[in-house]
Image (cartoon, rainbow, N blue to C red):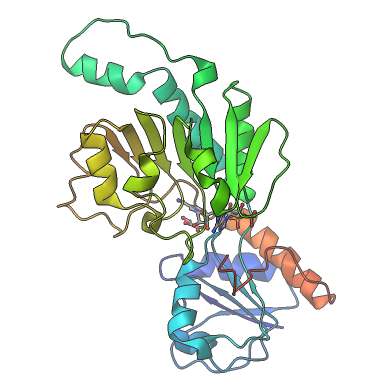
Length: 313
Ligand SMILES: NC(=O)C1=CN([C@@H]2O[C@H](COP(=O)(O)OP(=O)(O)OC[C@H]3O[C@@H](n4cnc5c(N)ncnc54)[C@H](OP(=O)(O)O)[C@@H]3O)[C@@H](O)[C@H]2O)C=CC1
Ligand SMILES: O=C(O)C(=O)CO
């Protein structure tokens, strides 16, 4: 069994060794331009088109992340890149759920306990206790109730906040109110105090967090974008912050990454920024997951995490 590996920044050697150990029957190699030799599986992040095109014999392509918008965008421009018969898989959880929980719990509790306000008061050497939010009014709305959205919902539920989620299909998550479909988006937004985005980037979700959407949240709401920069219209967020409609935002992802030095988001006192690392691919967990999936595929089974290319996630 032959496996080809390509990632623009990961160190290939440790992945090749790790996969080789987990799949002793396989020969794993780093794909290089011009390598057209046979392969059964490909592990990729933002692969060059020539790596995958013409490889209709592949038994699976494994994306080395949870989001596959990079691959699907390339596929739209170069439909010849991936044969329709080749299944594309993504990472489901593999330790990213816990990382998202850490980020969300830290951020939401900070806002709830007004640590953002106290940080500003510190700069003014101001000793002043502020009125607390009421827990029952601090409704958290999660856009996306998939692997990561439902993990985040679970972690925030234990703090007693009202939690709601929005997805394409209805969900049954204990203690979480489910809204679904375009028709229920307004009801989901109305009364939401903290908006957390964990949607995939698709033609239906691009630019979804815009001025019109933000205006439907509670006045003085908070925005946490953990998914993709393309979801959020940055100018609209800045305008809503200036107007006081949005109190603060924490952003891990941006339209352009790295975020340009000239972006007004950098200097905004009520915007927190992290460099797209809310949940990173953990090599050991990811290799365990992919090795298991390859074994299932070899046994004639269809592993979990298959991307629906038409749906876009
Ligand atoms: N910042 C970071 O470091 C990271 C960011 N990410 C981002 O997080 C995203 C989510 O990951 P994950 O939870 O694993 O993905 P999933 O595919 O498991 O979940 C996606 C959720 O979004 C919902 N959804 C999709 N399209 C729509 C729509 N048009 N309207 C309403 N709901 C919709 C789905 O609904 P339904 O359940 O009904 O299908 C599902 O609940 C990734 O795509 C990636 O972009 C991921 C990892 C790290
Ligand atoms: O896995 C993903 O989709 C990521 O964004 C990792 O940072």
